Amino acid sequence: MTEQAMLRRAIAAGDIATLGASKMWSVHLLDIEALAHGPRPHAALRAAVQIPHVCVALSDEQLRSSYQRYQTWCDQWLEPVRIDDDVVSIPFAELYASYEHLCGADGLSPLNVPVKALKELQLKRLVRAAASRTRAEPPLLDHSELRSRRAALFLSNAAWRWYMEFASVNTTVQSNLARLAVIR
Image (cartoon, rainbow, N blue to C red; front, side, top):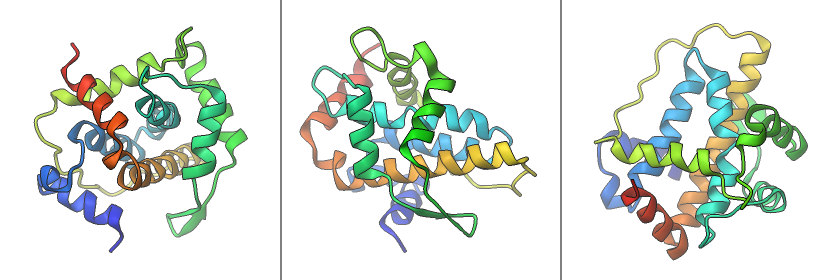
């Protein structure tokens, strides 16, 4: 069993605290995955393409991101992953084009802060527990929806790895997650 699978299983069992995982972050990623596996894969993709900016911002004391830092994050954390019996790898240019198409001017503020994406993450603090995200029979998806689903899961996979391998022990990330959890 992979570390990600163990983390997801522990979250579903309500055992987040012993893993040192952020409930807010875990719920955010599980919600994206639930959207991807449900009838709204395009909504999952819209949230997922913001993940690199959110990760970069959480790693920065001023919560800033940029195109260059988005690309650096993708270069470091995106790697081929098995989804639906296929190995999925999406080029950076395609991901960023999706980001620009789906988020446009709402992506970064003039100060390079991904305000809307951070607000969406911040709302996850209100969730009492990470509910079990059991999967029903997946809906039939057209080609575009299937691509959106796979891209969302591809980015989610990278975000889980980023959190486990870097963010869970990075003081800036943990401080920023704590700040988001208490800011109203």
